[in-house]
Length: 263
Image 1 (spheres, one colour):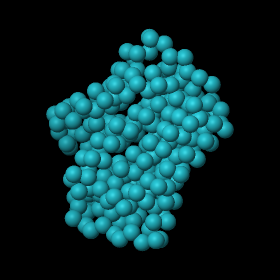
Image 2 (cartoon, one colour):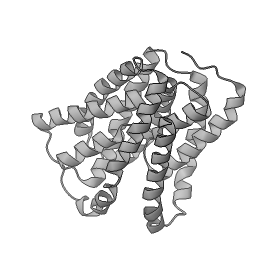
Image 3 (cartoon, one colour):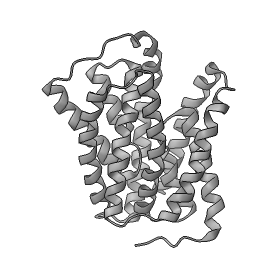
């Protein structure tokens, strides 16, 4: 299984990367929800290669996000490392399992996963509403029990990253909330954990030969440009308008892409 890169892909890849990078910079996330379906449906890239390319494109976003949140005091490094350690294990397992599944079946599995993922999205509004109240709340101490729980949630998150090429956000968010971290620290620490997932998952796919460097290069260049301009566009949008439109629109997009992948 391989990918035959052609020069006609360069401009579409740059535009795709730019569009997703712009959305990621403005609304958060890693972009894997859009990279994998677009690469498989528009460029007919085998799903395993699309997953590896997605992970490579997620890395720059999570690096910049982690640095930004660390400077703002929104990152609990010990908790993040505990989750990230589990994420490394899970991502390598997920990358290996992807070699045991056909590309066609993995596409359908990814579609089902995307639709199921809209369920936790329905609860995000309440969590965001509580963020201001929890900003000053102290972070819990990291006991052996919480370390074990962190590893479990981290493995689940990493497995999602390695198998589907997404950042693996839902298990991380769920685990951090259960541990009682303030909402702002949940956001910052989760970005840090997703960096572990993306790097380890990418190395797993590299070891298995499931990546095309040219494909990754042009997609990442477009994403970098979009991510650079995203904050400027975001500053022009009123927050109440963004809150009302973004959630429903994002869920509709995810469900639509999920259905298309299944069919």
